[in-house]
Amino acid sequence: MPIYTKTGDKGKTSLFSGKRAWKFDARVETYGTIDELNSVIGIAVSHLPTKKGSNKLKKILLSIQSDLFYIGAYLADLPDTIEDIDLVQKTEEFEKNIDFMMKHLPPTFNFVLPGGSRAAAFLHQARTVARRAERNLVRLSKKEKTDERVMKYINRLSDLFYAAARFANRIEKKKETIWSR
Image (cartoon, rainbow, N blue to C red):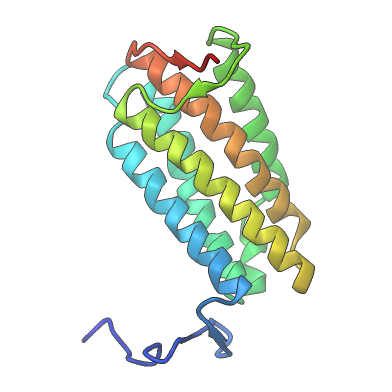
């Protein structure tokens, strides 16, 4: 059975509800960015070393990937799917995980240049894609009602990826490059 349908050849796609939307529609752009974010996380996970400390980070990232499928389905017009996960609890877990990772890192007083280990570099990329997803979600929320819990969850992701990138460099004993003027 082919995976192509040819129904999108003229610039429209089908939402889960059966409605058709332009591929540049705010909703399509938002769930597409969530899908892109999920892929970048997968690349980062594939580059995590098999060292102590990586298991916790890998577990966090795999959980986020699963959550993003629910969020993507919600954004693709399946509103009930968002009730299958507790986004409030997960956002609170993010904060605890961010605090845990930052506690084990030296303080910074300037920007950290993205890079270091491959996993860290991809986690920095995930951070920027998460920010784009958030901007797209805000744009969508100005046109249509969106769940506030999704907004908070996505907002917290970029902070988590920043901490995770720095933590990945610590695990791999990679020196961070601090930006200077």
